[in-house]
Amino acid sequence: MTAALLPGAAEPAGLSRRGRDFLLLWIFVQVRHGYPERAAAVADALRRLGDGSAEVATAEAVLAFLAGRWRDTLARLDELDRIDPLERFGSYRLTERQRMRRYLRTRCLFELGDEPRAKDALEAYLRHGETGEEAE
Image (cartoon, rainbow, N blue to C red):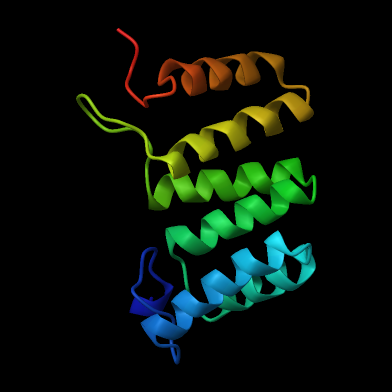
């Protein structure tokens, strides 16, 4: 397996770090302006170029969520959990991005009617509260 295909690879083949960052920003702008299809095409292109980073997986998860593709969203979140795990040992605080991932998972499970897993996901989401600290 080439380095460009490994999760978290710095940059896909043939694309500079700056070019990759520009495309990730472009995805965000397109979504904000109501063009999720354009954004999804660029995210897919980055993936096909070998970008297995957490940023691209996050973009794909959000785009699938916005399209109401709950199972695809969960699949991307599972992939993201392998690339950039949420859980760590000891005391930690979730970032806004990590909280968003928990929200997406909770909402998808609810939409799919998986009540037991949705309740567990909701408890995990709420456990960290507004400050991101674990409840004691």
